[in-house]
Amino acid sequence: MFAFLPRLFAGESVRTHLRDREARLAHMALHDQETGLGNRLSLERLASGPGRTYVILLCVDRFEVVRNAIGYDSMARLLVTLGHRLSALSGGAPVARIGGGTLGLVFSSDSDESAVALAARLCEAAHAPVILNGAPVDIALTAGVARAGELNQSVPSPVDRASIALDQARATRRRAAAFDADRYGDPAGNLSLVSEIMAAMDNNELVLAYQPKYDFRTERISGVEALMRWTHPRRGCVSPDLFIGMAEETGHIRPLTEWVIRRAIADQKVLAAAGHALTVSVNVSGRLLSDESFAEFALAEVAASAADLCFEITETAVMDNPELALHIIARFAEAGIAVSLDDYGAGLSSLTYLKQIRADELKIDKSFILGLDQSSRDALLVKSTIDLAHSLGLKVTAEGVETPTALALLRGMGCDLAQGYLIGRPVPLAALTEQLAGPTVETSLARQA
Ligand code: G
Ligand code: G
Ligand code: MN
Image (cartoon, rainbow, N blue to C red):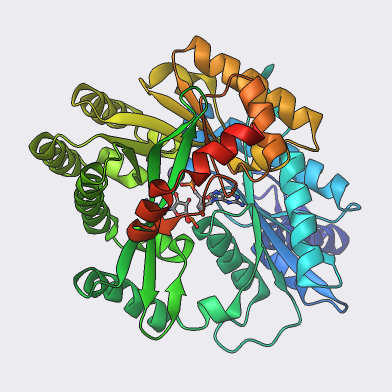
């Protein structure tokens, strides 16, 4: 019963015991239990060191989905492997886990630009699959960076600033972004911006810009993509990259998209009356693919007007709630609404996704098309994607066609449609009608191609 007493009384071993205990506690205070990597506190300490220091946070995209797919244990091992990889790539910097799927490290850099460039390179490197239990797991990372020494009253912690930068990268669909104090600096202003979007619909501040799509076979403009534009009375032109993300987060995307659909249908009638029968493509946000009452709205509008619409959707949308999304997409298809897989190649682009969805069109992301002239690797990817899509019965649109060379290459590859600044920039309806009235666009393209 008193077996511990002799040990307690032996002064030396008590001290050793206490020292061990202290060391263990100190270790626990600075390390993440699950992975053994450093924790948030350890990162905060590293960030308070001297020098031109930056904090970078990297978060696994769709962390919950991946974790539920592979399990908690495997996720912990995946984070450890990623941590080692990131550490090796940044000269042995210690990597910490900041909860969930977020890893962080500290490094020095001369400017926000070079810090973001490094963050983007780290994200790239993470794209190589991690082998777990003999099977590869594909993941993607998004990163946020923040200057450590910066004095910012509203967000004093550099780790918090990097975390906000990560959100900002996501909201604007960038791989990596630096903390943007101006954008964050006025959270109240951003909130009012959200409520102002609703008023903007009634005040005619929202307009649709239309960007033509050129059909290689008929050598004609066969459709247009509707892109939202908001001219704010004080702020001027607000990028859809900013307000779409915010509208999605605050539950306002549905009324906005309903507005777009009504407007697009009305404009399509105007175009038809002027002799231009064009399919109108509308971007439909992922969140709406699990909203059945939105689907009811869209189906009723299309049935009432016999409109010729195409809904552009992105992969993430479908991945988040596959059953419901696929069900709703199938209903769109039955009602004669074409479905297009937008930004293909920018995300995970899994084959399962292509197999599951009954789509009509695949849009190759502009990042592949912009480099088509220079990169034989991009050309190879684009060609094989076109062939793959064709074998699945999908038409292919290439977006981001800016040069005659790219247009010619795509024609040679058997691409069906082209969209981009070479063919036409997004313009208001009046300007589009004017362009379509002149023979210039199509004949000059036919000559160029
Ligand atoms: O047009 P660019 O025009 O800058 O558009 C930026 C981004 O905003 C694109 O990814 C485009 O898909 C998206 N976007 C533009 N209009 C709409 C819209 O009406 N709904 C949704 N969900 N996204 C849109
Ligand atoms: O994500 P989505 O594919 O809907 O986005 C369309 C976006 O692509 C819009 O922001 C539009 O302005 C942009 N865009 C369209 N054509 C071109 C092009 O030729 N080059 C570049 N850089 N962007 C383009
Ligand atoms: Mn689109």
